[in-house]
Length: 466
Image 1: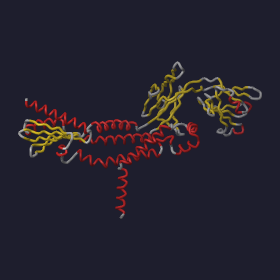
Image 2: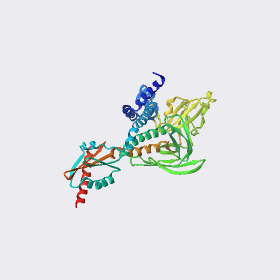
Image 3: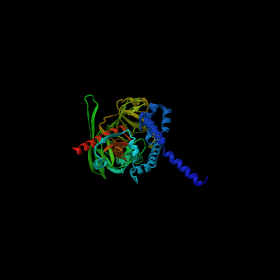
Image 4: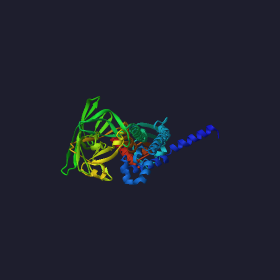
């Protein structure tokens, strides 16, 4: 076998592999099975949640298989790619045959196919075949696109056909699936999803990307002008609303109120009301208690401030504030995340030991055993609004796919390529009429259609006779 034959043979095998309907079935079953995994396992949650739920061993296995973000996993996108190639090649493989049916060079009806059809109706008419030809042909021409006649030894045949183009319905479905896949891939590669907590009166232009340790800068800033919340009698939140402003170079270019399921869309970016929480004011009091003498020292603190500790015991840094902080599996409520820098490590501001100060447990820090037991008081709280910020440029393509799949399914399942044949044969001075309807689908429906059409032709004949 020479190199040319080998290459041609390999190309044919690859083409047949991707043109196989069996491949379509296998890929669709694989997508269905893996989608179940994505339903059972919560996607894009925190590693801590996964560790608590599945344990360290299963967490390592699932993480290696990308089960926690499976819709962006390489193997899931490989399946989508296989399905895309399979649909394209299957469509090309079968389109040439379908094209010849839709646009034939010469319309060729097979009379015997209609004569043997179970969907036929026969009756006898008193008129001659030529007397029935014109009214029958005229009636059929009003309901069928292509009409032709053939002379026979005993009379004539009238053929009618319509709906050839409906065979393209399945290609519309194929193309719509491609649009859905392409739209999903566009969103996967070029979209983003992130979060931002914006205190009242503050603005942000950076968001934290979901499931990634990265920040993304938006083309505009988001400012929270006001946040309000209403509650049911039970105390459960009823509705929360944020009044936000879009800032471009410091200038307000747009304002809107957003609620749950009522997002703001600006420049292709969606801003959803996602959560809310309390945030401490700019100033509060930090209390240092000497565990031996019981003496207390109070100093003013703030988020990010470096506070000199009494007796030159080092520096306290209030790093952050967290609502509902989880400490060793227990929710200890609103807490400050702090860090102390010993005196000998003051030149290195990044060193120090982290610990939490829960507001609901002022004696909590005594367990740490430091030089001072630290607590916080005199805090004035405000609210922050939690915003989910997304951009998915593939959404218009997905919408187009949904519309097209509805149209394609309607054409495929509810519109027919239908053919009709009326044979007029003279016998004993009368005309034997045979009418049959055929279609590749809905054969029971064809029998009913033949009866209705026969009834119309009989009524027309009776009217002419009167």
